[in-house]
Image (cartoon, rainbow, N blue to C red; front, side):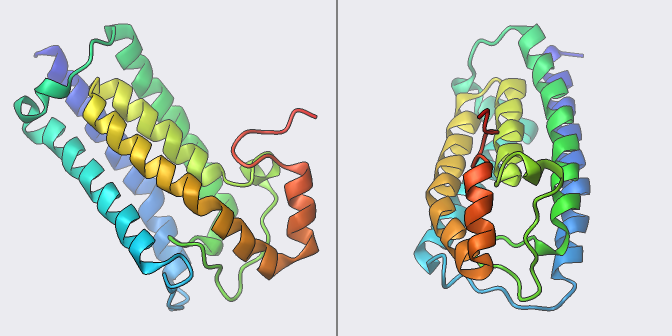
Length: 197
């Protein structure tokens, strides 16, 4: 079997694992029936983020199903590093499970908090305020390395940039919701990386 076939199979495993973790948590969070508006995020921004995510999926599926169509975007990455991408993705998936389990029914796909949301400061939220975005970044970096494809990497970078741009609005909404508790949380916890002091 050609090496690239093994990498494509590994990538399928990463996608299935991520979906197996994410979908049940999204269903559980949505079980309240509460409608979450994208108005606060801005409809244009919400559409741009989702369109960019769709393009990333299309590039990834092209690599999986029609690899010759994106072979022009291949980058030379040593085989050992590509396999490390699979190990990193597995560890990132475990972190994703921990993150979503800690977040519980608070999960939304926008900056708006649910009516019955609580401030989560346990699990990975003890060290960073946005571990879900950290998980997304780690998984996307792992997928880029595993696929050895700069087009997937560029799509990942665009999605992560949009999430980083959205973060201040999300934090403002959390301050409005949780007030001084969230302000104190900001003072003691890093945004994307743990505070060392």
